[in-house]
Length: 192
Image 1 (cartoon, rainbow, N blue to C red):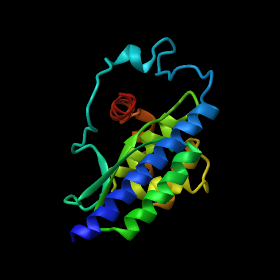
Image 2: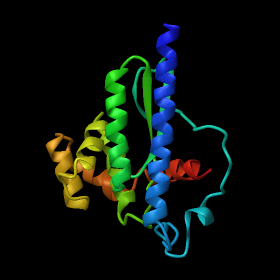
Image 3: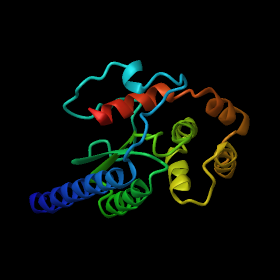
């Protein structure tokens, strides 16, 4: 058992570093001269709205979206944007790793919507959280990253319909921005 843990830990550390490098590369190439992320009020940035705090590790609680064994020896926390192409590729790598080590790894999703680079991404993140109310977050996640759907409101509703999520309740959740607070909190945590 001890010999098995060392290669798993080394592989996970390599994957985490690779994902970090890919994300940094993406923002270095595509993130230059972008305006700050804006909330509903045009004059307010996230930094203006919520106090920034420094954390030493990711906050994992009952609102955290996760898959895998709760008692896994390894936890992967990914701060990701549904509209980021590099994040989409990272999700595939993480899924492959989870499939190879189903009882050893837990994957924790954290929203990291970069609205300045990907307009409309907050709405996509909110819709995914709305899908989580029906136990369909990961299916919604996979559908968004598959690029088979448009990422506008109609595309999000089409995904929900294909996943047999009740359309009226889902559209009310999407339109209300119900999870914007949770999403912003993840974003701030990811910046810390």
